[in-house]
Image 1: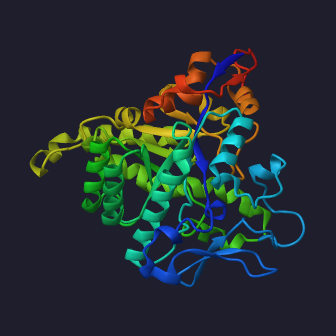
Image 2 (image 1 turned 60 degrees about the vertical axis):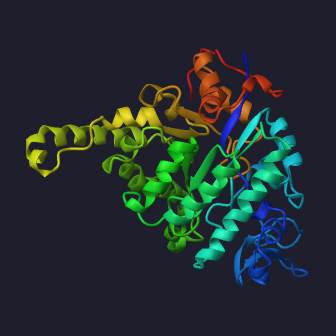
Image 3 (image 1 turned 90 degrees about the vertical axis):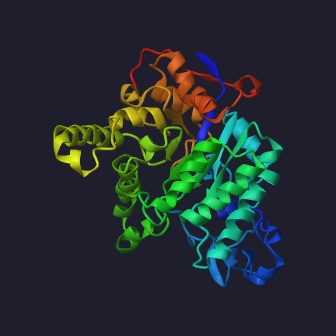
Length: 403
């Protein structure tokens, strides 16, 4: 048995859990009724409406289930934790969220916002929505417990807008990580329009993350399978598909090698698929340099480091309950893997984090486990775990192998 301060590096605050006035009250009056707001007609499910379009449901008012009558097709952490009344908006209420963290023996959450819920083609309107959310996140939400609630800023999916929002936030301070929703980001990362953003991330020390999404465009893959049990299995494919192109682009176009201080977290995409890809990148790097003479009069080869070396220097990945991941420590490096609970999503292990950590890491070296469940995050985000007042007693040091 060991004691550790747990830092969960992938947790959520979705649109359905935001207070109803979060965006509207922080946006300019010029947007009027276009600004995101909640509509809750009597006898109907409450929903977020923005610019005349429905953005998603809201849990702050009791009403018909978005899934209809009968059993639910998918359970969340709240269902498993015995919480039936969601009108308190627990994930978006810092006091109640901290109570849920205490229940799970977790000291800190790295909180991702409502990914891809901001759906508009109006660039100015989009920027205003992102800024409103980010300001509320840091000024009203994380400020309640800044050592425990580690907010992840949301960046617009286009380079100029993302740069300007990060620049604005960097000047204000207090931002440790910013998320670029890579499934919908345009153009691709090798486009030079992204370079100012990468430069700013290096200069500011803010970590960049890519988080998986189950919404369009990625969600389009589910259309023909809706209503079929087979659709559940498509997540295994979809999560990797979203990350594969941009992940390879980081190495193929020398982005990470050119920006050695840029740190990347790939969140909730799974990390078991990564070793083969990096191994293959190393092999292609060898094949490239095998023909170095060919490139001599063509500008040479800018890729000096092996992709695996760049990877271990700059890339981190989150995991929840993965015996496979535990067998990949040598590849990833023991400091590059970040444990997460995924609260309160369907894939979450809340409120059973301690039990799950014991089941997947009980056989491992206690010092390695302390790093995975909190120490690595403390180094990456500059957290002082000596201030933690919530500690978990983990069943570590067992001889039983991970299942």
